[in-house]
Length: 318
Image (cartoon, rainbow, N blue to C red; front, side, top):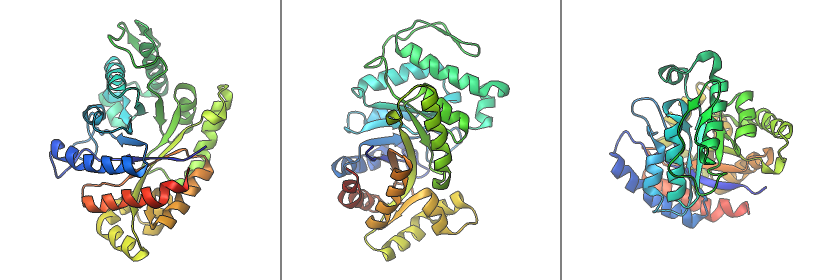
């Protein structure tokens, strides 16, 4: 299966108001389309501040008419949402975008689950029912009743088709991979998920697809990687130290910076990034999001990364 590329943009900002950040990222979206990227992702956070938004669907709706890229939440935190409201907002965004919306989901932190009143002993069952409820409401059902979740109203509008939007399920444990196979169309690995752990998790996902009677060629494996491209190794080293060092050290702890890059990022010259991306493709990854516009990265540096990907990386993966 071919390898597709998307951009994961930090629409939330510690430095700018949202309108200013939206304009900053819109410049990258135009370049990303021209470069051959296919998707754009926005994430959510339940913490104060930070680079993610409380509601990624709102900002994706704001850019839906400004880009032809597919729109993805990477990820939506299910405990922060009323399931009926998420089903409705996702259906609206799917219609606004002409069917270009993908709902990436995760379960967030134990603290968020506790604030939402989710029962600790039945988190897994609640998430499974949550996803089943989304499918039921999108198909036009007027109610959903499970052991953990009860919804007594249907939606006033539906997605473009009954099987949309696709759901990509995040999480690093076996149950997440099984959930992705049973209830979704893809398994999503976040920005700190290690390449070295992918074979185990992809194996769980593929085994679960087989058990569910789904063909393996339907498997979608999505990863989000911190990305920076330069023309020379010296330039990459300089830019990495200036703009990514703090974030990479936060990801990797006390390990060597290059070890963190090899396991969690796409950083290097075009040839180096191609070699890195080939490792993901050979493991079964089908989609890579390049997170390339941290607050501290100047726009021109992010633009250069987009241009190098478009000129020298993406064409190597037809």
